Image 1 (cartoon, rainbow, N blue to C red):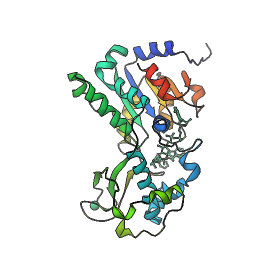
Image 2 (spheres, protein in one colour):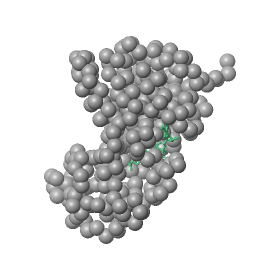
Image 3 (cartoon, protein in one colour):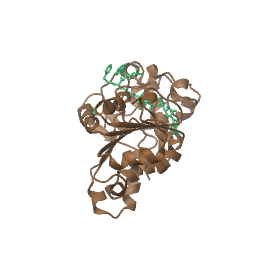
Image 4 (spheres, protein in one colour):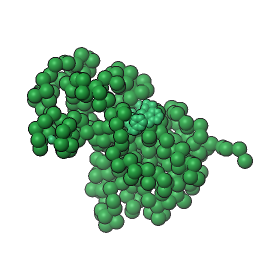
Length: 287
Ligand code: BJW
Ligand code: ZN
């Protein structure tokens, strides 16, 4: 029989209900309704800023001052926003007590490419509202595969510190306005940039740049290899290796459902395609 894609939420619920190993692969669209710009679409960051000069290890070597201003700006923006209904729907679904009635005896992992920390915050919030012991005991179900904006990582000893202070250091205070105008100061001295709290040398943002390997990719690959349902949310599916996870799940006989505001790379192969804002669709799909 020819492949038939569906946009039927009732049929999706049936597949969800019988899935045993569910993954959500998320991208910037998940946080769009919180007010965090995406990378590639209309108003996307890579339309205003040059990714190669800001999100590669070479760029940081060349000019850590520019790169730190960009990430300071991103940190300050992320500190001002809250998880939205899509983060909340995923977080609730990740709780065993809730999932049990929707997809009995299933395992769940959110693999997010986002570095904004909103999914872990939504999970904390969902957990704080639960009184169920199984929820409290459950393993953390969020993997932030491209790192975290609030991790500060030493360039020498690799010490990583989770740091949500604002400003991150005196030297970057107020530089957000320069970034807004795309007029960053190329000459903030090294000595005024964030330092490692353990050994004192220059630190870098704890995110994964182009050309860098994904930390613990083998753990992620094992989870993907077990999945029988891959729910792809708000990603253009253009950045590897995350862009391949859906195909891998389908190749091993699993189903794929894509939730995106617009058509995205490879979505014609998905078993389910739901076009619209994920903050509206996910609470219905996972509720
Ligand atoms: C909504 C919505 C709403 C809006 N509701 N939807 C194989 C082939 C070719 C190249 C490679 C390859 N393997 C590796 C590479 C190189 C590279 C790569 O993939 N390049 C491609 C561009 C071709 N990958 C890497 O370098 C990765 N490393 C790696 O694989 O190591 C091994 C290796 C290295 C080199 C060669 C070979 C192997 C690392 C990638 C790191 C990506 N880093 C960034 C920056 C992180 C820090 C930061 O935030 O600054 O990660 S780039 C940026 O893109 C960020 C994102 O996580 C990532 C993905 O973007 P995302 O989330 O998809 O956002 P958008 O904007 O593209 O899409 C948003 C979507 O949301 C749109 O579709 C909207 O429609 C939708 N949307 N509102 C629902 N309300
Ligand atoms: Zn150090």
